[in-house]
Each structure stands twice: as structure tokens, then as C-alpha cells.
Amino acid sequence: TGPYILYTIVRMKSILKKYAAAGRNAGESVILPAKTQEEKDLMLELAKWNSVMENAFEELAPHKICAYIFDLANAFNRFYHGTKIMAEENETVQAGYIRLLELTKGVLETAIDVHGLAALCWKLHEVLQNEQRIRFLPPNIPAWLIRLANSLIVLPTPQYLLLRTCHSHEQPT
Image: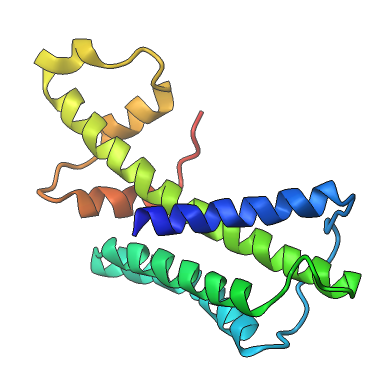
């Protein structure tokens, strides 16, 4: 569920904050090979990111991204409960855990952003198609987002919009 996923991200931010408050920085550290099954499972789940996005695009199935987000949050929480990240005495191992946590957090936030941007574009597209409602458009919407919404091909489902948005090669200006 949404709250579960957001709680997972809040948990990650809390760990990162404690790590930084202890005067540590994992900046140049690397993710070490997995020592436990939970750590391996998390790494394997992270490795699925590109194929999930490709598959969702090819099959016009954005729900697969949602399922992946949930599976990744579950894998992280199993890792978290099985690993004492902040209590790890070996600083190199601990820094590797932190890097794994940062990567997981980044993927979760990116996946949520992909869904959020797609939903926003779909609604904006609907507003732009209805000239009667255009006056209600908030003034702080970036010009590149309006151009993106205007350029979309109208299809009967928002799934196409999500996938076209996810795979756009045009950079915002």
C-alpha cells in the first residue's frame, strides 16, 4: 500500500540521518557482496528495475511498476529486520549497507515519481483539451510540462500516457 511504501522511505531517511549525525559519510564506499539471504534478495530485487520498466512499457502495463515498488519495499524491510545497519561494528560493511540503502531509496523515489508525473500529465492533458477549464490552470506549472501534455497522443487509457512519459527522451527545458 501507499502508506507502507512511504513509511519504508521514511525509515530509510531516518537511518541515513542517524548515520550522518554520527559523523559518517559513505560517499565513496561500495556495496559489498551479500552476506545474508535478505541482503541478496534486496540486491536481486534492485537488479530487476530496468526489466520491469521495459516490460511495463512493452505491455502497456503500469501496474507492474506498482507491484515492483511493493516488492522492493518488502525486500528492503526484510533486509532491515534481518540486519543491524547502525549497530554494525565493521565500518566498511556498515558503509556498504548505507550505500545499498541509498540505492534502494533512490529507486523507490524514482518509481513513485514516474507514477506521479504520469498522473499529473494525464490530468493536465485533460485540462488542456478542454478550453473552458484552461483558466483554472495554476500559474506555477512549468512550461515544459505544459508542452509535454500538449504533445501527447490521445488514447483511451492513461497507461499509454504513463509509458510514453517514462520513456520520453526529450529533456525538460
